Length: 124
Image (spheres, one colour):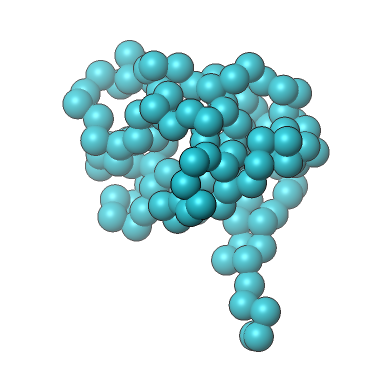
């Protein structure tokens, strides 16, 4: 895949991200419902019983992160909440990419709107 970045986000304060930064709090969700599918929303601005990811629950994973442009159109069922974020207790993610927090900080401070993440098969 070849992915751009939409924005940066985090439970912690903006560390000087070059992309627009969304501060995650108890009202922040990455929505899995059709109307706001694959959007980071403030539930106070879009009140509903959101079935997405309550982002504040993912600490330390979402201390800092980047939101990929995967399914940016928000087509329900194609997948949502695909991020580059910090590692946590588990040695795997649910489809994201995780790096240690120090590396995530460095990435946030260097990645701008022109950056691309390219994943390819080494044997291809």
